[in-house]
Image (cartoon, rainbow, N blue to C red):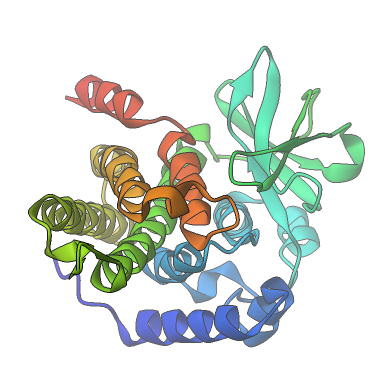
Length: 303
């Protein structure tokens, strides 16, 4: 098992960061630059995760994860007609995986997507956006979402809900790694420069211990993410590894997010401050598709 980033991963990450640092509307630029490839076959799971880490570091509200998961699924399982119609450059796709009271809910980028892959019972269906009555929702971090009633669509032969959930969950873990990495960097910098009682607050033992614990938590998120991503990239069974990665993304992500807020003090609860963006992004990633307890239940069932 080798977690060393490939040249493609490093180049994609660097290009993604450059675009996010310089663009006010990054999605078209990500498409134009090739970070969002013309064909999902161009980049595998590892490359996609490298991009998602950078998106998490910037808390970028772009439909990369849902589009790449749906496009990868259609590339592997879709019919020739489905692939030719929907696998086109810049087309936004989404996945409807969560359900409440019989409706698909918190569907990411529901207003932007041209089509959806919808899990229903043991099947996945492709549904064009124009056939749905979508009600907008706003997630805790302000991200675009929506809910709708599902009444049928085109089956995607051989594609299962578990396939979609596994890959979308992995993407959430990669995004959470970027969120927590950057939140910790911002918090460490604040602790070095914020002076109280004539000393930087980072020199106080309690603060230093919180930051040290957060460093270990981020390392655990990173390790479990790349372990799960590597197994998927090698075509190996990875249900337990993805659940483990999501457990750490949720449990450790919770601790890192709260550490960032606590160390920043009153600044940390200012909704206009950058640290608040990282807190809410981490909370969304913590609970989306199941928090820490849900992942432990998955692991217990697998064993």
